[in-house]
Each structure stands twice: as C-alpha cells, then as structure tokens.
Image 1 (cartoon, helix red, strand yellow):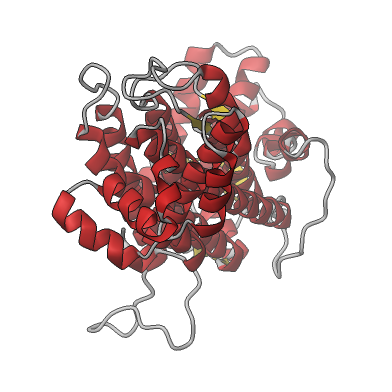
Image 2: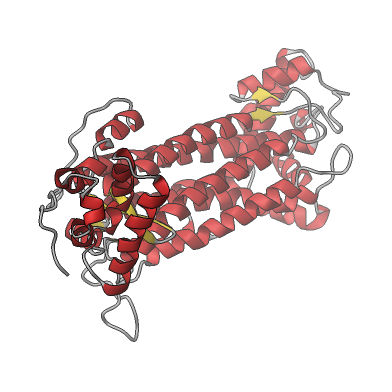
Length: 453
C-alpha cells in the first residue's frame, strides 16, 4: 500500500490486524450458523466465539513454513482455542473466508469513500452558488469561445460528482456479497440456505452463483468506478492547473505564507496539489486495467487474481480516499480572481459575441453564408491587428443597414449571454435558490463603451 497517501481511517481497514480480524468474524459467523443447524456442537461454537484469537506474528511464523496464509491463520487460531478448534473452518474452503472477508473490508472502505464524495459535493455546491454570477470566458480548444460564469463551471463538477455518488453506490452494493459454496461452488458440503444465513449474519448478500471465488466482474466494475471518480478529480485538477497559468491566473490553489514553489525561483507558486491529483489518477486507472484482467480465471478458479488484488484493492480505495479529500480541500481553499476573469473576458475586445451577432444578422434577412462572411472578416481583422471588434462592426454600413444599432449593442450584452444561468442552477440543484457566501468581487456589468486595451 502507498503509505504516504494513506489516511489513518482507511489505513486501519487494510491493516493486517483488521484483515485477520475480519477473517475471524467470518469464521465465527459460519461456525455459529452451522451450530444452529445442528452441524457443529453448540458448546464448540460457544468456545470458538469466546476463545478464538490470534497473534499476527504467529501467523507469519506458520506461513513461513506452510506457505498458505489461510492454513497459517486457522492453525494460529486453533493453538489458542484448543480441542474445539476441530470445528473451526468446518465445511469451508479458503476462499469462502477470504472472498467474504474481502467483501466486508471493501464495504468498510466504501463507507469512507461515500462520505468523501458527499463532502466534495457539498463544497462544490457551496462554491458554485458563491460564484454563480461571476462572469468568465468559456474556452473550447483552449481558445476564448463565449461567456460563462465560474459558478456554472463548478456546478458542472458538482453534477458529475453526484453521478459518481450514484455509480459508486451501485458498484459498492454489487460487491456486498459473500460465498460459502465450497471448493468449486457446487455446495458439496454446505447448502445455499446455510450460505444465505451466514451472509445475512455478516450483513452481506449471498452470491447467486459462484465458483471457488466470487466472480471478478464485480471487482472490475468496482475498480472501474473508482477509475471514473479518479478521472473526474483529474478533470477538476487539470482545469485549475490551466486557470492558474500565469497568462490566465483566474483561479489558483491555496498557497500559504511559508510555502515555497521552487528551489531556484522564489517567485514560483506551482499547482502542486493539482498535479499530484492528476498523477495519482493515472495509478487508479492503471489498477482498473488489472481488475479487468482478473475477470478471466481458469475454470473454477486460479490464483492469478489474488496477488493483484492484494495491491490494487487497498491501493485504489486508499488513493481515492486521499484524492477526494485533497480535491475537497483544494476547492474549499482555492483563490478565485473575478477581476482577472472579467479582464480576460474583455481582452479580445468583443470577439466572444460574434456568434450572437451572426444570429442577429440571420434574423434580419441576411443569409447564413453572407452573415458568417461579414462577421468573420471583422473578427479576423480584430485578431490580426488587435482592434476592437465591436467598433469594426459598428463602422460597417453593410451590417448597420441590416441590423439596428440598438440590436447590435444587444448582441454585445453580457447579461444576455448569461440569462439562463439561474435556470441551469435550478435544474442542477433541484430547484434550490441559495445565496452562497459572497465573494469580494461580485459580477459587474460591462460598460456600454468597451475598454480599450
């Protein structure tokens, strides 16, 4: 496990101590269920419940000799239980314990991840409302396109996070299954009814059918969902990295007074958290590929998946827990610069309103081809000569003869472009009408006389 990125809560889940404790819980649940069915003496089940214990060090000592982790575990427990230990692990195969316990460990980890997702959603929602009316330029291909608001961008991330919450809940539920079907899944020694009772005792469902193992499509689905979540976090981090570029500087991850950005350049304020999130997302996506490879096992089972899962399940859940917390803190503490957003929006001197002008020309009888030619000619000149697109349009009599000046001015109205932001927010946030915490710089309408730069 990548300990540097392990928070204590999830670290305890994947510790050796907790893994063996979970194995023990599965074994005891099976023994008590079999005792109720008359297959194991009740006194033995009681003795196992009260006495069963282990020392991790002793398990390691035995495993070094027998080279089988479950046998080492059961032997270590038997040494403590005494004679009644002959009923311990009765009727079970190793993976009845290992796979069922793994489902319980994943359930524990999933509970933390679900909390992390909800926290991220709450922070995104709060900051989306804070900047709902903060205008900025929307970019496609990295090039200025049309106006949006920063809150709109955050609302998009919030909506995707809500979808991830639904996806993850489904994937986690799909893995909330155990199995006690024996060495090839045919119930040679127990029955489906007993399996269901043992699983229910553990808070799990019984897999409808299994081989010696729970089928790995479930694990692949779970790991793939973690990869989707990682990709969302990568997307958010990448966007903030772009917005933090010196030429843009519209938003920036938190930088403390004592923080250093470069050993050589004291002026540097680098998006190190964002870059860390993007880098770790690659690891989670790579782990998902290994999960896909684990689906195809030989016949009723081989162990090619086992060594892989000892790495990818703890690592992926640990990394997602870490990344969700880092992203939540990133969004909550990031610096936002509305004045810079407005300055960048105005920097192309009205070019971002070309699409609306095109439509207004069409509405006033100009063919789309001619309208596009007229608007593009002025747009290209404004780009090349760094002129004011708005002024070029007003000076073109071919345009002003077709479209009244008042209508042309309306084509360059920022509020017209953003008129549906409230409706989008109502749709994203289920009709809520919130007033988020106010930023220092609120939306300011553009003046009718555009700034000259």
